[in-house]
Image 1 (cartoon, rainbow, N blue to C red):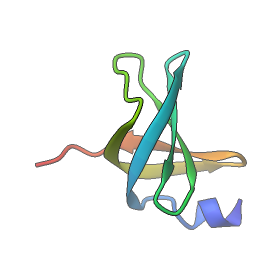
Image 2 (cartoon, rainbow, N blue to C red):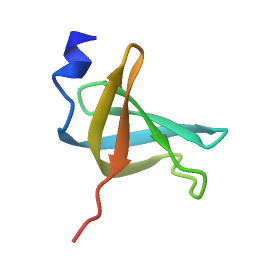
Image 3 (cartoon, rainbow, N blue to C red):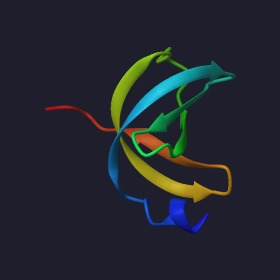
Image 4 (cartoon, helix red, strand yellow):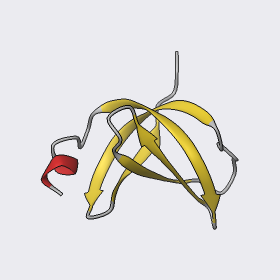
Length: 68
C-alpha cells in the first residue's frame, strides 16, 4: 500500500487490459495495478496517459490526461 500511496498524483502510461461493469483495469510501466471508471469507452489493449489518484489496497484509481 505504501508503494501505491507514493504514486498518488503521478502522470503515467497505462496499458489497459480488461473492461467489466464500467471499470477498466490495467498496469503502469512499473506494474502498478490501476482502475479507471468510465462507462463510455472500451480501452482494452490501449495505452493511455493517466494521472494516478487515490491509492486503495489492491489498486490505484486514475483519470485520463487529455493530450494537447
